[in-house]
Amino acid sequence: MGQPQKPLPPDATIYSTMIEQHHLIERLLGRLTQAVLHLTAPEDRAASRRLLLRLRKHLYAHIDLEDGLLFREFESQSGLLEEGPTATLRREHEVLRGRLDGLLAEWKTASVSALSRHLAAFGALYTDHCRREDVMYGICERLLSPEQSVQAKSLLQSRGSSAPTDSKRKPS
Image 1 (cartoon, one colour):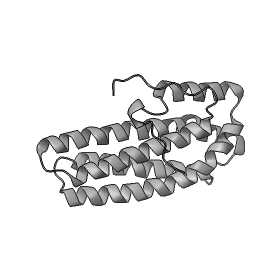
Image 2 (cartoon, rainbow, N blue to C red):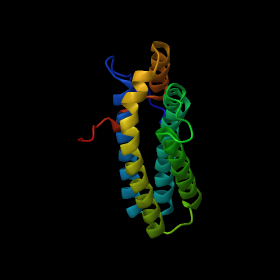
Image 3 (cartoon, rainbow, N blue to C red):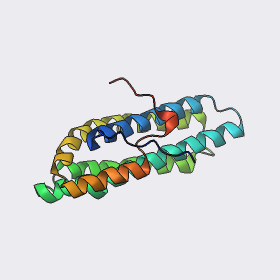
């Protein structure tokens, strides 16, 4: 935190950048899971809580871009609102936010085993959710007008596609 964000490569697509954000969130979740396994002192819990807050920040920014632009445009052009795939993804966003907020609320008092279980459940939900989202990105990107595409890339740039310390790509 506090470091400047990496600029998006000139040939970056919305699809590739959103997938990279998934990888970043997965790496943060993995680091957090490992940190929980080594909680022994109060300072360990404080450091791992900061990592949880970072994970939440990245996930919420990612969800905001999906819900606020990509999915909205898909729904506008397809007419699929309440019964469509993005409606399902939006409901899953609420579940993910609720789980993450619940985890944050319990962070100071929950046992290591309880935190580990919550993180494992969150990770399974998130991984399953990402599979569905990945399918939607290409469709959503194609539906954006040139102006919306510029807007989306600007939002991605302002939020950073990934932090410099998380630049390792996860193998596909």
